Image (cartoon, rainbow, N blue to C red; front, side):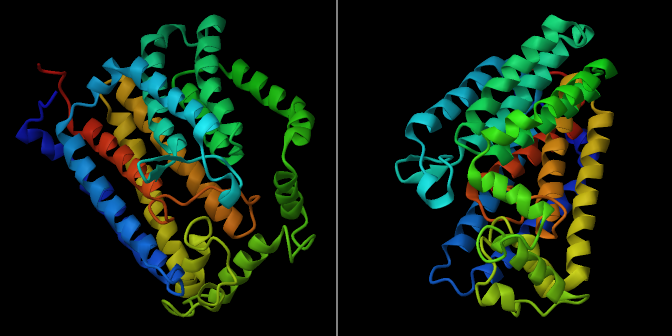
Length: 368
């Protein structure tokens, strides 16, 4: 279980680790700014505690051989699905956030979908490795899609379409990297296009409004389009150098909704300007580049697909969140990794980094 040799630390990715720490510290400062006018400072406290717990998890995972996760991939999958099933029956949050996505146990509230992200990626990475030579056989592909589809449907049922799309994206990326035949990719694209009318009529009214507002930004600026409009105003008012930390008018006068979570990037751009926004994007580029490098250098398919899944998950979050903030994507409830407020979200993201660093340093098999 713990077989890390001292010489293995020469493979430790210090650039990835330092990049993540900078992003986390940056996030805490911006959450402080976003919640400066609130009566409570619990947002900063929760984010800080989650970050510390996440760093401790990284230290533990460095000593933990990631291959052991593959040995328990079936129980991990079952627990992930059961957590999502529990949300359907016992979940909360529909009144506050419009989706029943949280579980509360003993006063501790968390999002099972965030935990399920890691669980499903672990399961898929191991299942694909075990069936690597048969990945393009219809029955094998059917099993992969079936096992992937169950958690996706459970998350969509909450309803949390944004997170469900995150799952769809990293599943497809993992299959592509594993060697999925292009004909299946073509079938998937065709099926997606043909299912658009069905998907459209299955959406909730607010979800359709978000798409329509994206296509026509001034369609309903005072109600359904308010978030996107205020976000673009905040981003634009920052100009090159920003209004100054804690000085953003859209932020400090509370014109910007969900500024500590979904629209934290708008806070960055308003107060730190184009320079601050580009700095964040550069840090994300470094993060993704280092993850891809670890995936390419992994000693086994399981480790490579693990990191591929994490990188795809981060990429979608980054692309969608920044895109919706500046008006290039429809608004969804997709937070920004390491910057947006969210205890479960922060902890899970850091655990992903811990597993990635474990893959980078472990070069030998398990020793029991």
